[in-house]
Image (cartoon, rainbow over all chains, first blue to last red; front, top):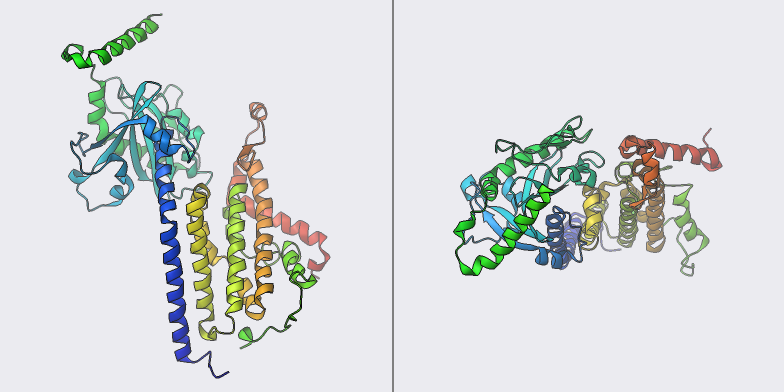
Length: 272
Length: 223
């Protein structure tokens, strides 16, 4: 064979050609599969948002259910004030990227809030992000319309230890969050903590931590505290009793009537 | 160099696709030359992703695809690869295949790909892949190499499957995510064994499999 496979020029030629072929192939595959991958990511986000209010949607139905149930979304600034006419959509805010971006000033940060309507009840879904043991952890917590009771929570992680830290993803860990409250009796902010050794049954601000997953549990507690404190302002507004006489607008009377009716029914229910 | 030399036993052109020799390439890795229990390759991933059967199966299929096609490609170009950059070429071929597999998993079985996380990427460093290219594909024709890759991938997957069935059952009481141990048993005081979830238990299971296999298979008994 005239061609010397081991000569320098052949080696250079071979490696150059190989790199070009592989690069083209991979670039093509990556671009070709990207739409499907992005759709998966979007669907997963919708699933996660919905699962915080206890709705288990499959990947296929996530999109329709999301459109149906998420009636409103807001963009909040670092003080928990709604940003009017924000240039980004709440759904498009990448809280994880923002969390990692150390250079971004607090004033520039934007926080999404999703309002979900389920069985006629509104809940306010707050996305959160924090640090676990091996990487980022994130999740969604749904607050009831009273602004302090947790309706549900869902968490996820990048690479926590399977069977240990990764358990934050499971139902047994997430279920106890339901019904906990993030404000104490004096109206002070009291975030939910994952308590090592197990939370007391009547602890309104604690859930069981994961044995063997202490750092993940602590990271989760820190995440809840750090995220919720931004939303405290907004949640406190929710807690204020609705000032009934303010509504004089005849257009709103209908909805008001139903509201009052509901209040009345709940009151009678309590009396019973 | 011997590695790029022609196949030592050149197969005849008329050899049937599934001759006895080729069938042996496919079946040997399940027992006599199992990558995990006999060659003791690819142990790390066998410990990491055998907590659930579904993960183990997807991982096994991914590894099979990578070993089969990297063997095939390397065997096809074995006479054109400059010997000095042989290992680099192998790495590039394997890495490219792994990225393709990873991207495909992300697009089509997103939930599993998330659970496998880094371990798909780590197929690149799985010793089985490089081991089979060096030991077999560089000295054999494409078709036997391809079969050898499939055989080794499946042999690896076979052990993964056994370990995963054991670990998922005793660790979570499930098979393929379906609850097998009824709630009534838990109510009576049964608890899932947390140790089985942890990697050391996988090592113990693999060790037990090796022990059983060595005591039964006379070919493997050393003096």
